[in-house]
Image 1 (cartoon, one colour):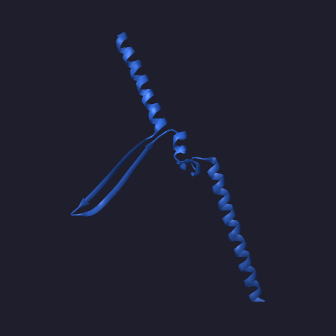
Image 2: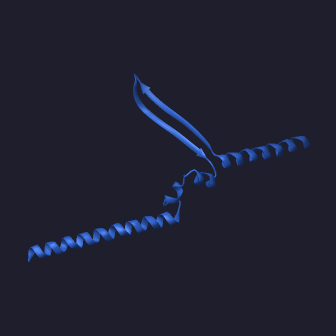
Image 3: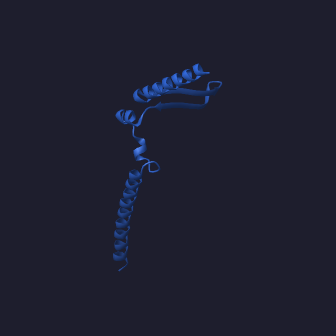
Length: 106
């Protein structure tokens, strides 16, 4: 029984080492699925999976989670600021149109 526990601990250590290496270096898994009948493509799916640590992803220039308002509070504020600026611009445009219409009616 003691041998099995030792093997289990060694396996866990090896798994942890492998996981650490994968996250440190990054790994890409890619695949394509294509379904066609009589040379007519019915479905074409391209699958790309990147497994890496956040630091490694940022080093590679991947940071989509920082712009996603559902994942980043800073992104939701930026989205709100952009929306507010757009509404303010639209409001100014509508006010100027209203003033022109008032001038035409007089």
